[in-house]
Length: 62
Image (cartoon, rainbow, N blue to C red):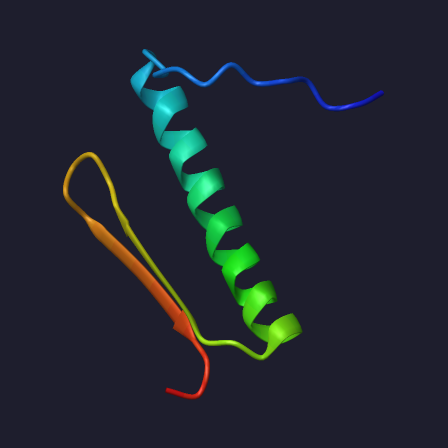
């Protein structure tokens, strides 16, 4: 069974929105780390939540 296509729109349920944010944030940071390792590049990710909290991640030599 394949993955479903997700309609991109705002999630109205606050708890579901928070769970989705956390999962996608962690997935995005992991993909950035993989890109850095595979390509030997420097990568920086900056994410700001709707509450204003800042999440950052960087990798590379610089």
